[in-house]
Length: 153
Image (tube, one colour):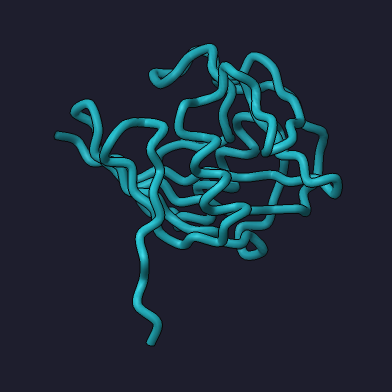
C-alpha cells in the first residue's frame, strides 16, 4: 500500500466561511468540493506544500510561516493510507480563482457544506477547525473521523 503525505489549506474569511474548490482533472475525487491541497513534494515543508497548493489550485498567496497547523488525520481505508495535515489561514493575497485541478471556487459555512463535498470534509472540519482536535483517524469509513486522545504532559 502506498502511503500519502498530504497538506491541506483551510482558508477562512472574517465571516467564518471556508473556501472550497470543485476538483477537476485530478486523480482524486473529481467533481467534489474540497480544500486546496495535495502531496508534499521532496524538499518542501508541510506548510510550504499547503501554501503552494493554495496558489496552484485557487490563486491565493499565503505566507507558509504564518500558517496555523490545526492538526493531522491518519487514514487507512479502501487500500489507501496516509496522513493529511491541515493548515489554517485568515490572511492571503489575491482573489480566489479556479486554476489547476479546480473548475470553480466558493465560500461555504463549515456547518452547511454542499452535499457533494468530499465525504470526510465535514468530520475533519468539525474535529480540527471547530473542535480543536490535534490528531484524528479515519479507519472505519471515509465519513467516520474520530479524535485520538493525546496525553497531557
